[in-house]
Image (cartoon, rainbow, N blue to C red; front, side, top):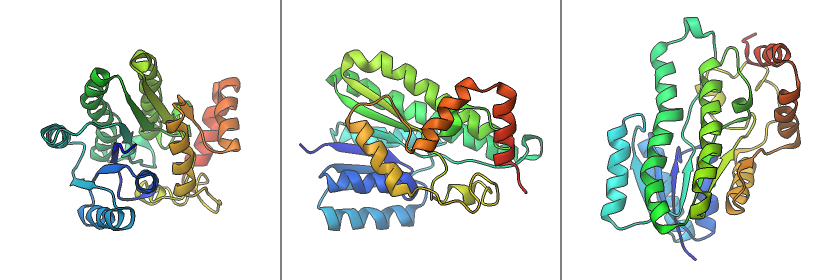
Length: 259
């Protein structure tokens, strides 16, 4: 059965790979990203290769009026969103005190506010129809504080907490909420976050965005509440709960601090 999928942050990384997976399965797509040229090129490729309908919106999701404009366009076309993938996000590495406040604020707006707002708009339709699936992309960072990436880690903790709470509220309406919590992954995230040289990313063989997206896709289809790809990532998130807080902070600081 053909469905319609909305994916944010769809022009690269995990969002890009998720779009391919949904297109392969014959679903129509609504893609949102800031990079207009990359997004439009990708949309054309998906239409040609998989013969699905693809609508592309070049939007800055931190502007809530732009989020609302996408929702309005969807409603005017009478389209129901069966799957929502909130993937858009960014990070920043460095000491909070010396960071660019505008970037920190933008990160909070994108990682938390826009995700919650878009979900709030679409979930009302899902409740009326009593169907739908939501995936919010968090991170293994969601399970612990992260010195030298303090705001980023905190935003992902919000995504995890928000998503798990929402999964309980929406279960009676046959709507599943999956939180995907990948560890470090081969995407442009590290470069954009000025984190290429920290131990978390440097000289490590990282999982591909495609493998993470596939894991998340399967978890979403199965209605799982939490999806943590990779044995070591699962072990880490479990050990954080048992370890003394000072140990968790010390390890996180070592992984995130610039050499």
